[in-house]
Length: 417
Image 1 (cartoon, rainbow, N blue to C red):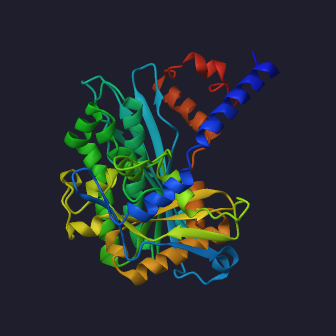
Image 2 (cartoon, rainbow, N blue to C red; image 1 turned 180 degrees about the horizontal axis):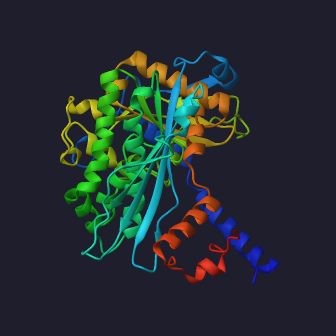
Image 3 (tube, one colour; image 1 turned 60 degrees about the vertical axis):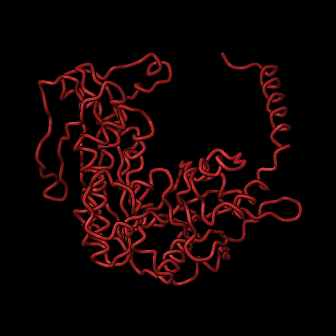
């Protein structure tokens, strides 16, 4: 049954009431106060530095047309992404997720684009069976695949298989094809597997799994090795985050002063948006921050004084630290976070080149760099493809997925083939 007009009007009235309350709080002023007084540097409650500007803390802007027409500093780019079918529970007790990773090149490289790394992560609470398998070839040698036996958990099975499949496929494909990158490598997403590293904050069982199990350490170790490979080749590696949900800065600020925004993205949007005298958003220029060195939240795992989950690091530990800057595109009202290891941003000139490259790409495309967009397209598994693959897995298992009432209610399982 749908809402009647009278119900819609009543809800809208509640929204106006909430708006009147919210408007009494000047969130823009709060953001300006934090920007001016709390980030140079930002300390935790124990006095430890968790965020610090690299060079001068400042906001910058560049005319969008000028940025788009400027010759980019890096003539070639490679991007990488991983997509999954989303975790699925089957009636035989298995929980699985399947991920495929692909690398893109700009200019295009059809041979490279064809390559795939495919991981099927499988969870079972049956202690008598195991699934780990060796790598197998695929598509006449252009791809490879394997099964990963996910560690046993009593809860969060879907979260575990999803993170392990996604990040293992991505990191393995990146390592396999690292030597193909000539000028700049852009991961579609964070520099390190934050979705996995957040286990430490989510639940005791997940924290113990992260600390004690080999599989998560293998995944994180791949990203450590990836940084080392690119540092050794002196080719910069960055992560382009389209939808950052981190709250590390916000939480740090909230312990000291008012922080009314929901996450760090909302804070940076307030800091970077430009408005005219009438309050209208100005859309003629991209804006961005300086680079920051971060040990906040999951970034602390890879800090110089962090334990990196006990993974051996061959370089100076500070070279692995996460640094980032934030870019705002007013045309789409989107905030992008760009990360890179300290190894590539300690030099001011290289920081400037990376900034100019990203601003050029965002200005020209009104969104992520072309290499990222192409990698996303290559690796993504759409709903129809995911459903078809799940049906094939059901046939291979000779069983069905477990369904809930909402699958029927919302048509999630009603695909026609």
